[in-house]
Length: 116
Length: 111
Image 1 (cartoon, each protein chain N blue to C red):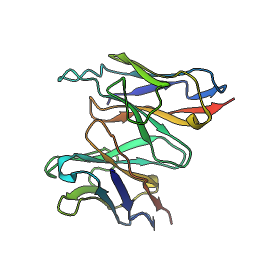
Image 2 (tube, rainbow over the protein chains, first blue to last red):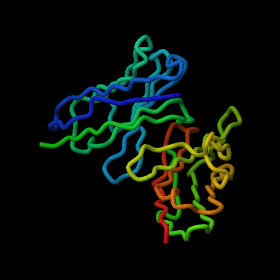
Image 3 (cartoon, helix red, strand yellow):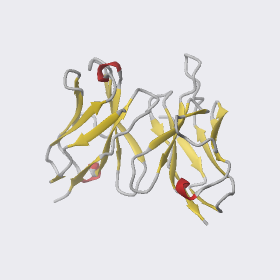
């Protein structure tokens, strides 16, 4: 069974940093591209970042480029999102999502709250 | 960026009646490989999104056959043949042809 389990969400002050993790199981992690998608409270879905199978091709949404860094460790079956210079508007549930354009499996999400 | 426009944004439906959600893209979603990367997701209250339909009309495993997807080019539709109580939630279309964008979401409720 495919499982994606996010962790690392917390309450952080504006300007602070946080690192999210996503533990994958039930499939060959290194064979799949991965994404982070977020959802602000009561709002819709927003794609955040993409990483290819090897970690060499990476893309970001304009709203996070230069502040967030996506990475992966295929040996540990894990996906990461390093978030720096956090803003109030980054408050959201962050989902780890499998696959490039098909988005077939989603984790349960981890809540990041940016507030003073 | 490709803009995905869903309608309606709110959809009250009587149990057992059909429902339909439209999703229009600002550009054709046909990719160079011939595929059209248009997915539909259901998000029940308090849950993560779950994919229902991929590549316009392919139903995911475990998705009831009352859900169907259709369309081409820039115009797509999700249909529910007979709405059940468990269908309450928000439905999103998503295009993966010109990078990734989501529709605004359509909230389905029972009348």
